[in-house]
Length: 247
Image (cartoon, rainbow, N blue to C red; front, side):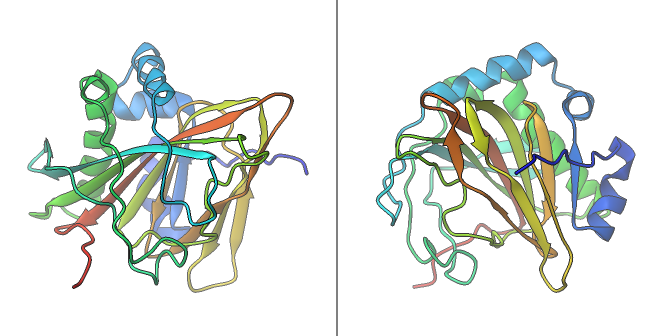
């Protein structure tokens, strides 16, 4: 299947794209402009994906996913890390892994100290806050480092299938692709017939989603020759509260 190139947005189109389509995509050049990160800072951050522990919670018993996860709050233009907590989603948003507390290893301190990390999370939260009229909002942030590899022959970026995350906004940064094919992104209207598909190929491109308007998934990856992998940074924003397990 031929890989389709995304339709990239200009920086001033983020609001209109999210309003009209429910998502927007920036290429690498615009991500550099948007976040204020240099290419060297982004390249340095990319190295933090070489030390991710295996995801032990996969119900298909696969060994293809590695990840770290940490939590933050953004308010009054200040990004603050909060105590480590489980990642939890209700079953209605994640039919495969919902309803269970998943205690992933936290993002390493050495990663948090890289300049690009704070710039990326802060800029995403700041812009979303501005689009909402500078509300006095605590933006609860979950940041996930993912490596999907082909240890099992194929790797599944979204084993749960097409889904919403149960948050307000999601940013999926393509950190790196190495020796793979597949990994096509598919986006569908949550309450309509329209859908789009494309492949994020270039390092440090980003897909930004309005989680209330669209559902999304990524197709499995396969190695081109030897073992390959796909690295992403997924950042979610939720107003005022993290998702919590209801006892």
